[in-house]
Length: 191
Image (cartoon, rainbow, N blue to C red):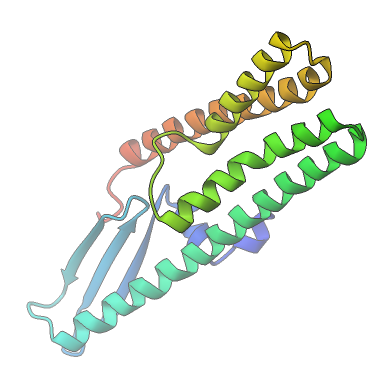
């Protein structure tokens, strides 16, 4: 996704501010109500230049936060759908290039994580293990089965699937650790 597409969006704010965006609302009696919404869902709110709030002030302010959060969610959803589409296209490309049953099985193995995520969303449960980790385990089991039953045609696609999903697992670990470091060491944006 091009950086120009993210300019002046809440998602760009999250990227530029290390995981938070701010919403300020002018109050009826003067002053401002300012909230900082963090990526992890925490919200810090300050009342600036006033001593009291009306129910309307509060409702207006938190409605603005909900609108901004909705924009961020829709942008992130678009990014995830784009990545998913690329992954499906890659799996379909494997089938076209390899043109054999083992290639089809390799492509199916690439799509297993997407199926797991779909089931996860439908059931609204959280898995303790990521979809690429599940796919890597499936590929490793396929390699073991291929070696045990002398199915050499399965070794290459299963190995490719294993390598790609292990790369994703390692990438996710690195990104999560960097995000945690940024969010912990990013300073206090409310100051």
